[in-house]
Amino acid sequence: MKSTDNLYRYQNDTGDISFHYEASVSLTVKGTEYEVKNILHIYTAIDLSCNKFQGEIPDVIGELRWLALLNLSHNSLTGPIPSLLRNMKGLQSLDLSSNQLTGAIPPQLTALTFLEVLNLSGNHLSGEIPQKGQFSTFTNDSYLGNSALCGLPLTKKCANTASPPQEVGNGDEDDACDELTWEAIVMGYGCGLICGLSSAYIVLKLGKPWWFVRYIEVLQLKLMKRCLKNGTGRSRRT
Image (cartoon, rainbow, N blue to C red):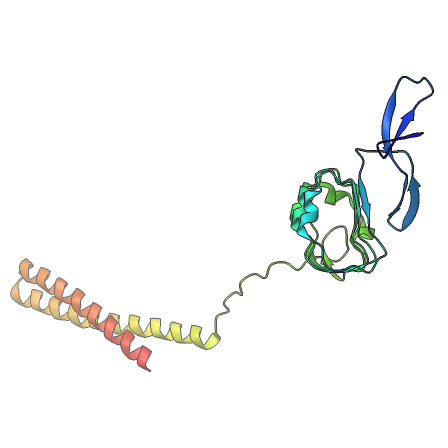
């Protein structure tokens, strides 16, 4: 291997193909440390685990669009997971475990179609776990230690949206309504009976003047309506 412009040139046995490589690095993924050698310059990774970083994860990290691995585990990072991480289209491994992150897992992260490894354990995250995209492939280990998280793949189910309380009828109110209905019917029936008998007497007495009969029918209808209205008003006041 030869150094060329701060890079290493690797040439295979046949001598006809060469690639540029960075120096080898030591990576920690899901608690396992290993050394990666002969890394292509197009493969990029950031491992800042096991430090004493504090504060929130800056949104600007989402500008590292083709970063393949990001490890910020075992620090003291706080605040929410930036939704702008969705811009890291080439991200394959994301480890934010063992911090003090809060809030919900941004559903925008389901846009990371190349994400194969996710570790958010040991934080204070809450809410429902996204189910779309690569998130449907992760296991419980990705979310352990976040007691307020719910939904698959965890066994803790999310509380259903509270349905509006159903109105339960009061027995006293139902009885009052029944009493009011029957009282109005009886009063209307009484008014109608009086008007009917009166009109029948007049018809028999005067020899069926049909114009008068029609007049009595209209008057009877008005009286019945008035009786019903008055009866309803008195019942409500009582």
